[in-house]
Length: 162
Image (cartoon, rainbow, N blue to C red; front, top):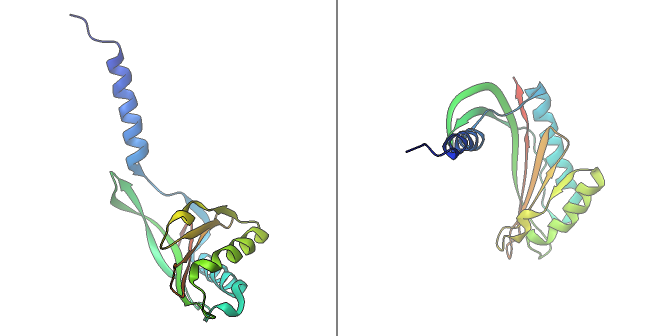
């Protein structure tokens, strides 16, 4: 009985899919962590200020740092030696509207800034969200609460060396 000829192809395809989907080392961007922290704080604060008086917004003063980890099969398997800067801000909405009602204005502001907008999270019925890539070095997220006067703003940098 002869071996099927497709067996090597199937094994190779499985190895490629397993390697591509389950392992990964984040890309390390140029720059320094102090600059990344300043950038994400500025991005969150500018977004919060763009909404105007409909938020009881207190500008963020600092960013946290997160280690960038290598992944394999969905698990962290090592440290890359790089870090990301992140700023999460939860804000109360004033004037009787909910947080979700502010997302169109935030989207308009981000578009004027030239950010790449991802609207795929707007379909969430309780916590719709917008994502924006501010260049190659930062991701912004605005999450509105439906029926609640609350909005979350979040920015995270690319992985950079400390």
